Length: 110
Length: 115
Image 1 (cartoon, chains in turn orange, brown):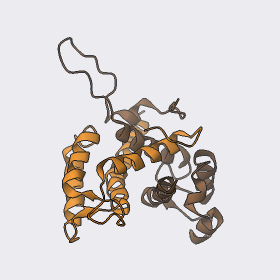
Image 2 (cartoon, rainbow over the protein chains, first blue to last red; image 1 turned 60 degrees about the vertical axis):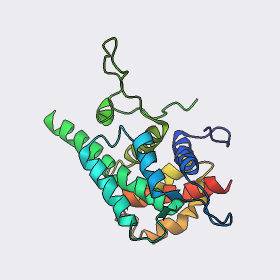
Image 3 (cartoon, rainbow over the protein chains, first blue to last red; image 1 turned 120 degrees about the horizontal axis):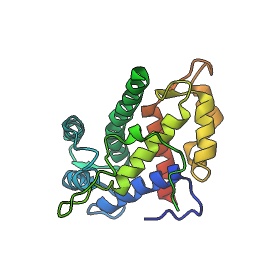
Image 4 (cartoon, rainbow over the protein chains, first blue to last red; image 1 turned 180 degrees about the vertical axis):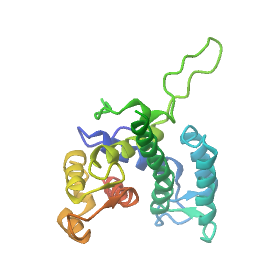
């Protein structure tokens, strides 16, 4: 799990964790030349195992479901690294927004 | 070793209770997974540097600072910063929002994978 690049910053650690997480749930398709991908089933498994605290909010969970549903249009049904990153971003972005709003409301009430 | 370098106000973590008291015999409080802590870190770093935009966006300068200070190993994977800054347009008006920042981290991540 540890990043193999000497003294990394917390941000680099975070990026590395997210990369390792993709590798943990992804597999190669029949042909080993294809890049690794995550099946939708494994992606759901990943969400429930790795993100169950963050997705306790029903709104968040619904957003995540919608994100995966959107991928259904893609015929191969497997999630590439780019898609994985975008999906996690789709989960992170509303959380970032919520945190910001919470802080602002704290400031206003003070 | 991976200490959370930046001090974060506790309300940032309000969605992720860390230290609620546990009565004996019940499940321990939810411990965030590494993935969740990672996402939280990426968010908190963005918030930490997005001073002018009040955590909504980074200015070109703030973005540059973040990449130089926080991505010493992966910064080069993000691509030439000057070009990125130029693409953002007028440096006094330019804003890098969370989504774009996330995409930038994606470039850094791809750099990680090539290693």
